[in-house]
Image (tube, rainbow over all chains, first blue to last red; front, side, top):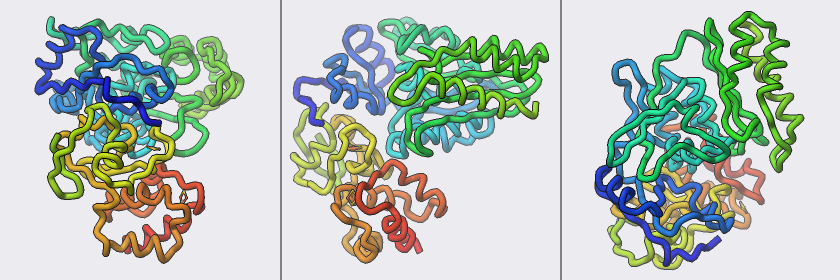
Length: 273
Length: 142
Ligand code: FES
Ligand code: FES
């Protein structure tokens, strides 16, 4: 749908410092990167803001690298970048797997991991993986940097702890404990679907589990993990899972279906543990 | 604003937040790029940005400053994809065709055959049932 665009403004900073300056001086400025949500919001009549800050040129925020045994994924890394990155495929293969399932190729070429986290949708494909990996969000402003665990960064339904004047710079992912990484997205079709249920897990001496589309926020399932850690049975773990999640009926699925599928995925991931 | 369109440097005046799709059709006179859904689902508006398929309905024009954009008009007339699409009947109403052509063009011969379907998942066709499209692309790669 056509959007009246002539009264919208796009600010294109030449450097990260310039972007942070612009943001500090203008709280109404909205950062955008791949812009994959922007015109969707505009079509729906829910576009917030008239002035946009284009982060796309800030290539220094797109780096994916391992520094002192920590995998750092720049906020501007697209899902196509992530799916192809050797460092991700080796250290956190389920992130590469999730990246390949975000929308279509066209979307993967533009959508960034920083945007996925900033939007904080409960259905975001990458978030359960980042939760299982205990990712730390690196936030940058003119005042400097701060770091927040992803669990603290997401504060509610599509809400985050991002402060005025701050940008997400990167995600830092410490080495994961030994174990098999598992990821499964269940949608209406094999490709290009919004998830009905997403489950990510680490199956090993340390069990970690996180889910998407089953609560107002992407959820680390700590009580289910605790049951598994204390040698509880799969039935007991499933019981804990059912108590932790709070799925709803919506246009994509029903609460009952989501409960059933989440449990099936848990059982299939941990059956042979 | 300057950018490279189908191999030529062009200078086009349009609002920075106008959709690349609309700039191509209205300001550049290239109507090969089609709008289907207008929200990134159907792929009919696919163009290549720096060689990679993107939905032009989701790209603010200002973001292509200095970049390379390729539309269906930029595919050489003797490219085998075009001939096989015609011969196989891979196009009916034609609304999806430019998008399929560009996604397939970008894949070149670098993807394995089984990756082709996955790569085309973001291009929807309401007419052909896809088989003729896959066949054309396969033949063009042979
Ligand atoms: S018109 Fe752009 S994806 Fe459908
Ligand atoms: S030929 Fe009509 S949509 Fe594909």
